[in-house]
Image (cartoon, rainbow, N blue to C red; front, side, top):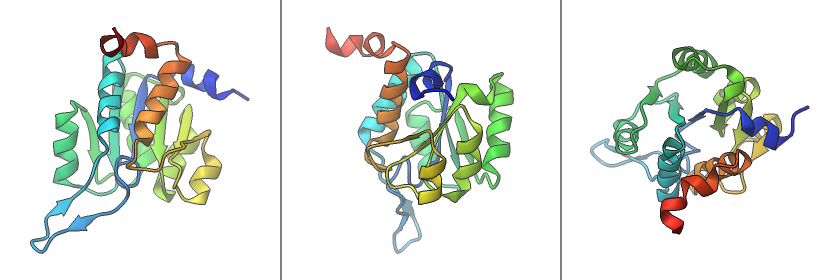
Length: 174
């Protein structure tokens, strides 16, 4: 069985659920029916650092939201799949388009629809406040809950395991 550090070595694509991972899982609708979401700023910088390292990041959600589309565009996330009822099939499509294997992908999830992907990819990850079944299936459980920097935590962990972290943050530390 591979160690966590060994699993991190082959990761080139990081996919994440949105509600409950990039957000705290709450869906807020105002009186006009307009949806709002809160995203953690450190997750955003983490995604930019991931891109700087030459890797791809994508979001995969059962729901569809204009807010997600806007946030993805702001962070230059090109892999955006909303309304994905079968997340594993969608993940396999994304990987085929990217020319990557399941072992080269990591996935962050929080609830039951994420379970098949977490079990299939090279590095399945649960946020700290994920449901029990997801936490049990994951190779790694974040210290931070969804919407509170868990994505950044994972990006740092993978880049540090690959020996890339210092190189990627050099612009901020010199």
